[in-house]
Each structure stands twice: as C-alpha cells, then as structure tokens.
Length: 251
Image 1 (cartoon, helix red, strand yellow):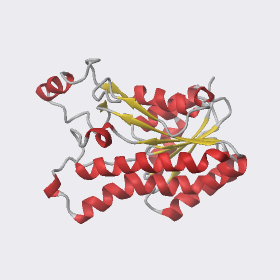
Image 2 (cartoon, one colour):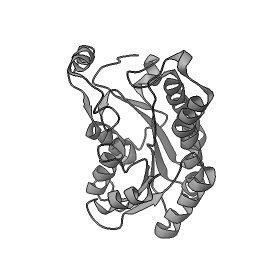
Image 3 (cartoon, helix red, strand yellow):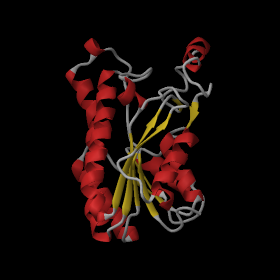
Image 4 (cartoon, helix red, strand yellow):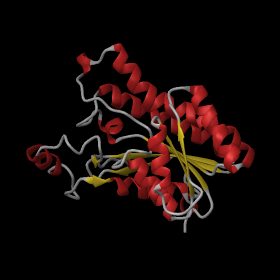
C-alpha cells in the first residue's frame, strides 16, 4: 500500500463520475484515510461512506470562501491531528468564446479554479510546515498549455495556467520545509462534465488528435495523483504531469 495510514484531503470529490472521487477511491485502496470536501455536504458524506476501509470523512467546503477553507482545515486537524496529502481538485468550466465572457463568468471561473487552490493550500500550509512534510497536488489542464480546450473557454485556460504558476511558486517556497507541490494536466477525460456532450462525430474528430486513440478515464488521472501523493515521487516538486494520451506533446 502506497499511502498506508496517511491523511489525504481531496476537494471537489463527491461527483459520481468525477476525477476527485476516483482519486479518493484509489487513495483509500492504498490505505489512506480520505477527507472528501465538496460544496454539497450530504454528497461528501455519502462519497466518504462509500470508500474502502474505515476512518474516512466527508465535509462541506466552498473553496472560494477563505474562512470555509480554514474551518475545513480545523475540522480535519481536530479529527486526525495531521495531514499528509492535499489534492486541489475542485474546478468548474464554461465553454464560451472570448467575447462572450462577462465579468460574473470570469470571476466564477477564476474563483473556483485558481482562488480555491490558493485558499485551501493556505489553510493547510502551516500544518505542513510544522510537520516538515507533506504533498500538494493541483489540478490544472491541457487547456492551460495549448491555449483553449473543447469544453473550456479562454477564462478557463487562464485560470488553469494560473494554477501552474501558483503551484510552481509554492513548490519553490515550500521546498525547504520538505513540502512538495506538483500539478496534473489532464486532457479530455470522460467525467460528468464531458459525458453527455460528446456526439459520435465530435468524438471521432477528437480521437484523431490523440495518439493513444482513446479518451481518458478518471482513473488515469487518479493514478497520477497517487504517484504524486506517495513516496514514489519523494524527489519531485514543481513538476507538471501530462495525462492526455499524447493530445499535446511538448518539450
């Protein structure tokens, strides 16, 4: 087991077909005690109860609210007295063009995808530093690297690019405290967000641009998170792991 008895917090992890829940299940199967954070408290409780093993926890948390993140961190630390892994997974998207982005849409996409990473990380960093150990993994996207995506507008690309910069800066600052920070950049993954939007024609066109000739599964991303959370990546920080089937191959 790669995460035996470790405490792992995952945001946005209650969606049935989502990357967050797949990650929670993978971590639990490897011996971790998992805390699922989600806007929907009942969904978080239900998801936590579905995990393999005992000792998991589901909590309500709005990652765009700094005080809510601090409260969630306090609950986690009261319950477990430590944290070993934080996965900043919560995110939202909106498939619009540049001239269709209004101020409210810009703020929402930035708040959840970028501000939420900052707030939740800030809530746990003091404990990571005090322990002199910890791993933070952040969800970015291939959209940040290629300048746009199929289901995400320019503001989504901008927010996810911001996550890359923020994570690298955190990695540099927290490295001396033995806290690692890395990013995952998924390509097109079959989740609740994409599941009902792919027509056979669109799917065929997309697959032409993916060398591995298939869409990604949530488990593919969960496996990358597992690597970054475990000691297998103990000398890796400030890195970006592409999980895109070759959709984007870059130097």
